[in-house]
Length: 351
Image 1: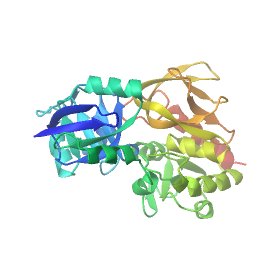
Image 2: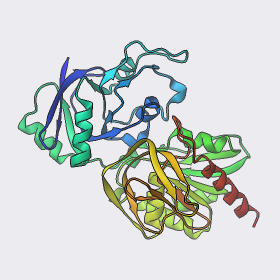
Image 3: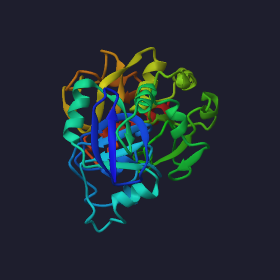
């Protein structure tokens, strides 16, 4: 069935539905990953966004639930050039089109995805709407008015969850929309991970006597007023002198709590091929990333090679990175950062 994607600037792309059918508005973004589409699609950081995959063939190895980063799909819609209808993989449990349809996620295919990505690259991230027919003035007004709001609250757990071996090195994880890969990276390193809702007071987190605090990834603008309580809690946690490790949105939130500011990027960094420079060792790592905002700082521990934006901060006992060292789907070049967190926690506990 025919469908249309229309951008805020008025440009329209005609394609076809391949998942659920419907009309949906969101912020249109693209990811450059050649593999890992399941991890990308189930990443809560895409909440409220219409996600475009730039690699032309998606779905070729089917749907593999153990690879999911969350239980559902947070993205508002999914766009690909060619959805594979004959997946081939011994772990596959079905087709991508069926997966989207079962979960009510709108899928759009057959458009010129290269042209769409180039439009965003030149004009910056913009809102868009998928409709059954060419857009009306009402559709254009809806596109113009749209914004991603209260995203963290929508993606966070609602009550405490515990993962890993009981009695092991305890880590308190503040959940802003955390990927499963982060929890598993800690659990496989001998940690018991207590996952707290995003709005948990600092006193409640410290009461569980964690050896360290993990700040996971998540969607939306870190400086949104709805996140002010989180930033205040992080100031308290920093004041308590406990080791903190932040990833992606957690990196941005920790920076805000430390007196830095954040800003929106023209089109963000989304993909598995983002090069970052360790400013201390001068070594370059290839990283997995998914973010539309960045910390505005020059005194950073990592920098993006492409545009010079901040990719990491080191505060001594605490530290954070913009990229994903757990990187399920790859690359795993920076997985050592979890080991660094373990070392800082153990040194803290031994004092």
